[in-house]
Image: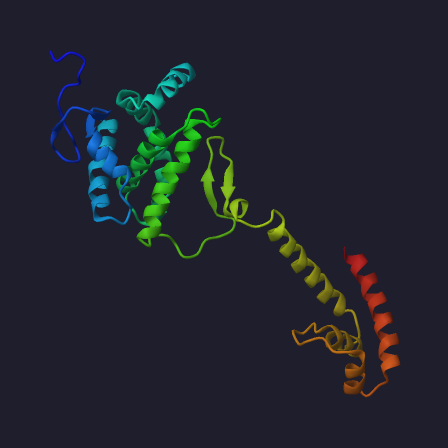
Amino acid sequence: MEGNRPAWDTCIVCTQAKRYGLHIFGKFVCEDCEREMVATDVSDPRYRHYIECMKEIWLAALS
Amino acid sequence: MTRDEEAYLLSKLPDGDAAVRSMLIERNLRLVVYIARKFENTGLHIEDLVSIGTIGLIKAVNTFDPAKKIKLATYASRCIENEILMFLRRNNKLKSEVSFDEPLNVDWDGNELLLSDVLGTEADTIYRNLEEEVDKSLLYDALDKLTERERTIMELRFGLGGTGEMTQKDVADLLGISQSYISRLEKRIIKRLRREFNRMM
């Protein structure tokens, strides 16, 4: 046990193991990716990648 | 989620707790799907629209201020829609023509929000133009009741055929009659037109 610290989880955006972030329907978005995602312009090529990643959340919500 | 549960989560929101934000995002994902559906006719896949809307929802939860007297669902709807619109606009996916009467939004009660409701014009501008159109059409109907010469005089004097207005003197010269006669005719015609007008209204 590591006290109150959250367990490591794999981020659906950067695929790295992180501790802190959002767990939405079991899908994990680390705080770094979240921060970058909400600051990324819709015309930025990275935005496309975020759209693909976010699909996992909806798929998880449907199942 | 009950109203009390939501109120509790919202009170915790300013702490920026990830678990609280996660829960609020989960609970409002249904709203994303609901709004995304309205943009299905833009050629984007529904999964893409929902993803974009989800980013909008995350932004909404991050920037929502519970101190402002506005419901999270209302605020989130705006953020979700904004995110989708911004994406469509940047990627030129928006139709270039829209109708004034096109529903932009339908609220949970089924009330439609029309483009004409939100245009940045004075409230009665659109209807004022409409009234002018009706007046114009009534005027042309009334003009049809005049003799050809009377109609010609009115058209020349007031530029009704799209040509500029002419003075009584110009019209008199053009038709080869005196200005005082034009003046008398004009008064009589206007009286008749007014009568016709009143009958039609």
